[in-house]
Length: 246
Image (cartoon, rainbow, N blue to C red; front, side, top):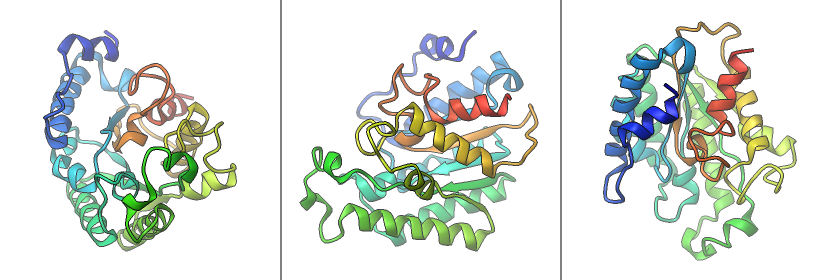
């Protein structure tokens, strides 16, 4: 059974009123059963646990369910909503608290962690959806800078690898229309850059029995990726899976 068909058959649609933590727990319960049915080594080495709209507080609230998957590695790309979603903005110190809490819990569970920095948005396209005034006295670029500084500090203080996707995207021209669908979320080519950057920070040899959880928000889930995220091959977890199979 294909994972897409399994998820459809089990009816995992989450209502608008559900909390992000409940959504995380619900999706993970389904994934755990799916892994037992289709086999981790063959089909589920990389698991997409992206939750659109979730800030670090909401992700941390559901993190225990993610740990129930017993991952060897957690690739955490979190904080885009803290910095860029006016409805979910958090100050840097608050983001730091929740990021550190997740890293601490992951390490206590025996999982390695990779943190991923956030790229700068295309302000013209971002401001087509959100008024500049919604960001108060700290514009989006400043918020991204502060978040990335926090990510760098958390990585350094905990001795963990940092995937500097902010630098990778800058080196490739930034959030152009070729790499970004809306000035933040990515095209297949953009997600490919992210997958390659993550792969470069993983161990050279990854066992087929290892589970890698890609944990985060819509950038992990694959919002605006053609084909219906998270099952489309365009998402970065799917492209990371393909790289590991080479």
